[in-house]
Length: 136
Image (cartoon, rainbow, N blue to C red; front, side):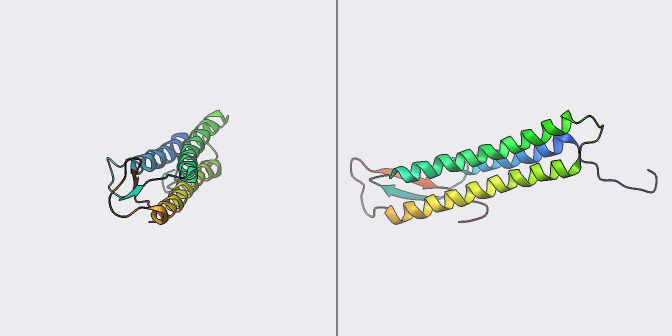
């Protein structure tokens, strides 16, 4: 391989890329790390909770894609994993993170429509919407 440079994909590439995307997607959803918009809601519809759970499930899908890519590459008998499989798993992890971001954006839009102006009552609470990478 003197005159030839080859880009080798290792099994841990899919795992690391997917895991970094997943961790970053979780960190961006924690209001302690990222500031966002805050809304006052007196009646939180269950649809908002469902969208939050769906977004977290999609972030979990990024982790599953990362682990699947890493494990499948390791399980292959050849010393070098199939690069197409690793690329597909990394793209799948990115797609899960983008989808989670879009679901969060839809939830934030719904909360913005339902937000209450002025002072909050006894049964009202705060909802924080953190900025996403792909929509805001």
